[in-house]
Image (tube, rainbow, N blue to C red):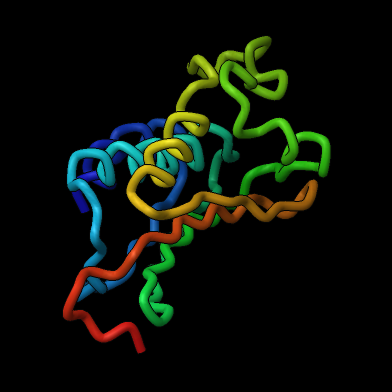
Length: 146
């Protein structure tokens, strides 16, 4: 919810609808500030690289001793070459020639932070079909991962 509030203005400006899961959500074992940093990065990228009238959808799913958070969007999608380069520092996949702001560090740092917390970030995408970023983190102790 906090990360979503941080990008509300960007959503309005770019005409992108943000769909969030209803609470309660499964708890994760993670540093709250670093988790907020990762989520804000994933959400802002999904909005910035989307299209006017597009959507961003967040889902949170318990998976055994893990929690899977998915950020899906209706953007242009990525081909295999772009997916292979996506998590490289300073890699913007050509966006450096566009009006989309950024440095190309957000996803590289987010993946590094996720791994430091015992998690992972991956992406699934095809050209023309948007992206689905998956953040997997350990479930908090004592939660039922169903």
